[in-house]
Image (cartoon, rainbow, N blue to C red; front, side, top):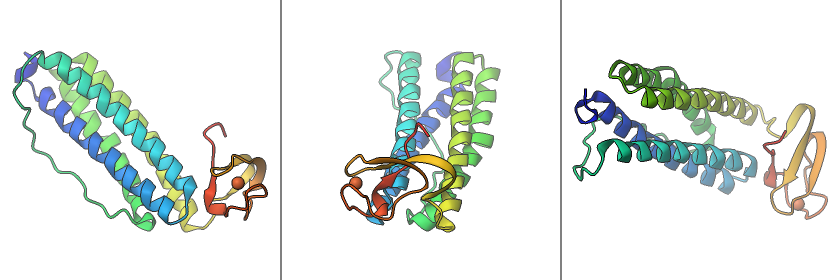
Length: 194
Ligand SMILES: [Fe+2]
């Protein structure tokens, strides 16, 4: 089967469009989080948005390689979520969407790619679904912490960083007011190396 005749071509375009929209939604949530005073959540959502755009970029590159020099648009028919980006609901909504994509959509696309003889694309869909499931866990954990107002607490000592001045401190709970710049707790972020 040629790539142009395949279902995988459409799935690649659908996945690319979906990832771009996920990336945009995550940037909206990051902005909402910042305006509500949660640099911590904003920082993580920006990281997840960056992941989505990296996945989109990879699929875009693969599409260009596969369609060669065709200038024809690739048509798709797909449904995409339009969720409110209020923090209270958007974290859990995002976790559910990631789970659905990771457990259903990408494995389905991967199976079709494999059946159609595009093992390289099957591998990419599988890797994307794996990252999505890890991100779903991160989102769910953050949603629970946000709901229970324990975003700035940990059962063990972890490193907290002030996103304004760079002050760093290892403790079970982040400061209420930064001892260096006096900015409030909302500027605290949770570094990736924890
Ligand atoms: Fe500070």
